[in-house]
Length: 271
Length: 89
Image 1: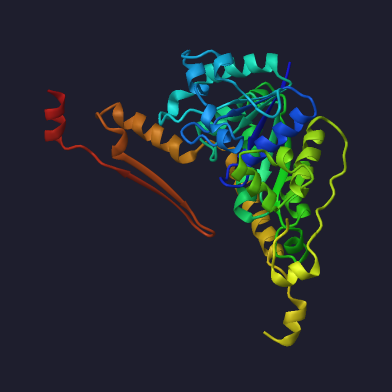
Image 2 (image 1 turned 90 degrees about the vertical axis):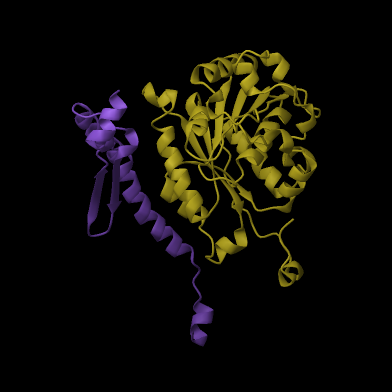
């Protein structure tokens, strides 16, 4: 049976979809069978980040409503044969997802895949709660910024209360993934440090993804950063985070400011 | 700002950390209580509707929590006898 991992945050724009794509691809690159499920009904985006936007025929809601078979809706990645995507629907009907339907789809995916990633919509409403409902693990994507940390705290509260595991007296394994981290600004005390974030959220760290233009380049190209630029610092951070998700005990190194003096003087950002 | 301040410049991160710690301590305390406003709204509705037919929108409950004082505001729009009779037939 595969593991269900929800990628969530509460706040929008912190990097849930990017992280889902990067972590999922990293695990697929390591040979795991991975399915990525976009739960952001109405605002599908994972297909675009994965570069599969022109191959969407059926979606999650079609499968739940019985209009398509799961195997028809799953899109196989062109680069990695063991990576699949189940896109979100663009319907505006917010009740299109039912708990029963989601349970059936997740159950079927768990049998075929080692990892089922659920890319949560922003917010704490029904969609976000359904995305986390059947999770074994949760990746809480957090930016080192006050509103993101506050929303992550809310989400952690929900993970401890509203998931199937929590209701059965078990625990969802929660991890914090800090994204868009700027080592130089954190060193100058202009940005919450990793220690600050972890102390406040009291949740173990899965990884630190430095702010990087490679991430934007990757989404421009429709390719997860771990595939298109594997040596980029952000890609390496995602690959290591994926190994920690696998249970590997890998120390987390604090990213360093890699820019030279010349770049700093010109105010250039890290690659 | 004195010259010394420029060299001693502390970032804003410690302020952010402190604000978050205070805020989240408060929010975590309140989180596990059921939504008081929704609960009051439901119970008030139930009591009134035992005697008079009333709409969900006719009962308005709002709570404002301040540092030193909290207020609870309950506003009930009571339908007039004429409107009630008209609605009944």
